[in-house]
Image (cartoon, rainbow, N blue to C red; front, side):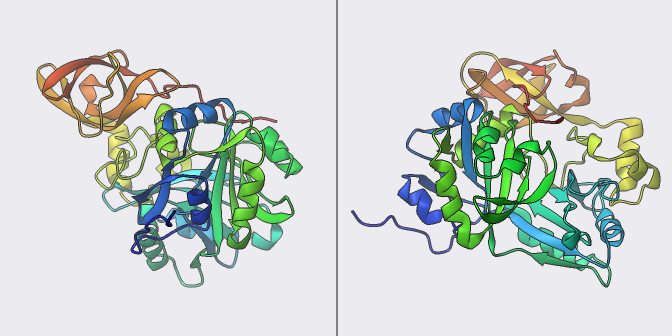
Length: 380
């Protein structure tokens, strides 16, 4: 059998050949040739992650160090670009935050870590979205003061092990990881391989993201896949898992036209940052906090079994009041789910709306998110 054709304009991750070996269906995504599903299919992969442990290749994401003379200087520099409290990070802690433009629009969402290791005490580790990473890195680098530099990481892969059995599995190779709590990171040897491990993820499940040297990525992935609880999971199930968890997908649920307040992400802006008001778009965002917004991101539960997809118009009171930004079938809830933006008057939980699917209105209800319980490990 001949080898599958690969579009040479697409980039590949260090695990690309392994995906092919495992029978993955590959699709273009954010400039990469990525696995959308494996032989079992999206539904089975989704449910396996919810009940056991799924392994994801997220090496297309952008990893980088921001380095300077000391943590305080580096953190203050990054705070000029994001609304999160970076200065307040404890060693080994992770913070979800947003890169903003001058109008308060969201350039990207990202994870920010202050490493616990003394050798990295003057550094911040960031992970940004694949489709935005070149623009993000250029924007950050151009806005850092003298003496602080951004250094993209090109020689590491990133894999995620997610699900209720992820900790049990991972502890076989890295016992110290079992003691970690949600949104913390630590440099740990995993099966003898030096990795930067975070207890985090984007599925709503407990688990880890593992930054591993590129040369060791295949070996470590095969070790984890060798455990009976673990199966490879593609981008299809990753999308349905994050949707069930009520988590935003950049370029769909959030972008430069949405602010953190409209997107129901105002919680990322800490008290000190609100008081100082020195982040991009602060005047606009603080006015929205004080006086409200005209639209809000909400969860939607359509009636029936057919999903309502991205771009579907939302109708309330005989007029168009918004648009679905993510929608599909939620395997864990055995029915269609969606999120989108609606006029604020229609954003209250329990509000009845209609979704225009193929020219016909389908009943739906505004509901609280997440659609499934998040199972993060927050305490020891």
